[in-house]
Length: 292
Image 1 (cartoon, rainbow, N blue to C red):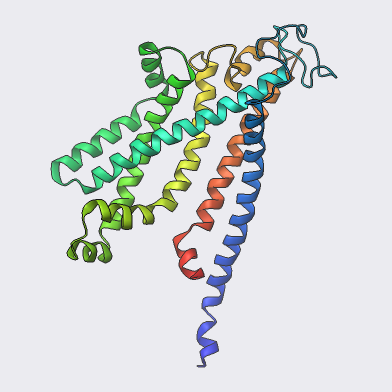
Image 2: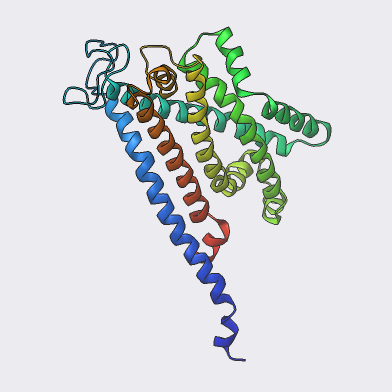
């Protein structure tokens, strides 16, 4: 058997990995376009809006026209202004929740991975309880203690998601700690903080980034659900969830009030999920090893 013949069985695997990288890149690009367009809309809303958020001079339930791109709602507010404001709230809710979940979750996950015996069992049971605790009920408790604000919703969602991130981080860290190079680092006298920063976190971040991207989409949906129930950002903040709640009674006469936020909500979640899928393919450890 020649050297060329020996390489033949590896070609299909290499081709499959190459195809997965191409699909991952394409998926990542599409996801970035969808999510990026809405993020751009949110960024523009910080500096410019067609009308003030509380302007009710547009007339009740007017259709899309020259003065109002998407028409007005039952109070006479410009729907496009509300959609822009809602995009900012959605992005803020997603980023804030993911940041809270990442900081708390990774910290708890690392501590649980290093724990032994009864402490490990206690932390694991605590994480399971947090995961089983309903996000909506947690939000109600936080709102009762504080008030119905976007900050309360973000805090509740972030705390609920931190348990999921912590359990994943615990599994990943334990897997890394079992590797020989960790034993070698500890034998050479490397401290635990340096081991975590220099060896553990760099090896778990690709999987964590993919999971956090998925958590972003879930956080956006959760915030919309809380706002639909009146537990999110109060008026005149126009959350997409609140817009859907207010437009359900007038859907037949003014469908744009429900369709616009609903479509953008779906596109944002799809875009973020595509980004997560693309990152999963492009950051796959086996793929990265093959490229090097």
